[in-house]
Length: 151
Image 1: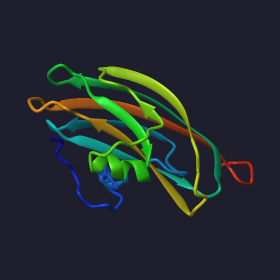
Image 2: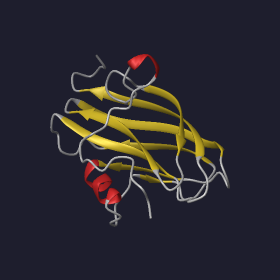
Image 3: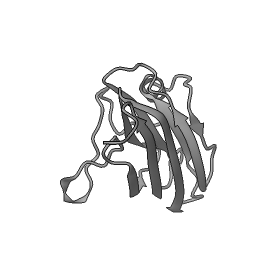
């Protein structure tokens, strides 16, 4: 059974060195991180889209540097499907790696609700009940602001 890092339905803000927030949004368009996945758990990383963003693309690359067979499954999904994922229910995803050691991807994200903020999640799932795994990932967010330029 997958153990969850957080059972709460609230969004998390991951804190990096120096107290800055490690999320991707209109102001933070490049991320380069290293994390440890505990055995049987997952790691979630938040991508926040704002209502004025369009033509949104996320390019990423990731790898497992240490831990057992070094395979994880990686997904990108919207908030509705992330909640299903947390409950072990069937869910839809914009990206799915399968069980791999590394991969690259480039996907388009829809700001589907045109609400103030739309949330997507990058999720690294460690199915191993025996081994922690160290992951490294880079993400780049590209978008157009409704006035035609990024702020």
